[in-house]
Image (cartoon, rainbow, N blue to C red; front, side, top):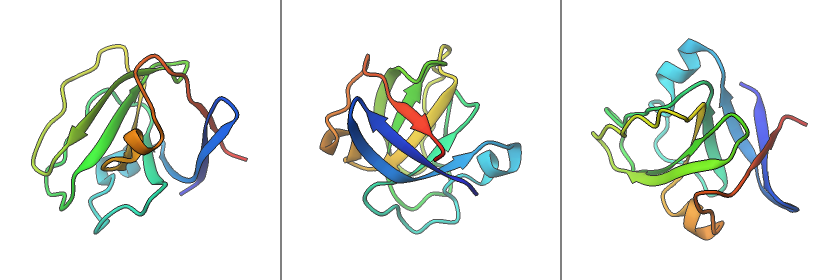
Length: 115
């Protein structure tokens, strides 16, 4: 699976984001992970709703529009389903608390690249 770099403005937030671009990768998601390390994550593309069924750990969920503007951020604990965010085109799943550590908020724009 290809790794992506996430930036916000001039800050590089992570170079450890896995890209789930096909149906199989999106279906498996984080199910085979025991946890996410700091700065690790998964970008589900396309996606506008996620679940944490069968997961063992909580995550931060960042809903992004087509221009990678943050539409919504929420915490998702195991055995939960997020709301559908109709304008979302992709979802970034991060370790719990990572969005706060990076000071991310709705309205910010992220840059996503595969260097």
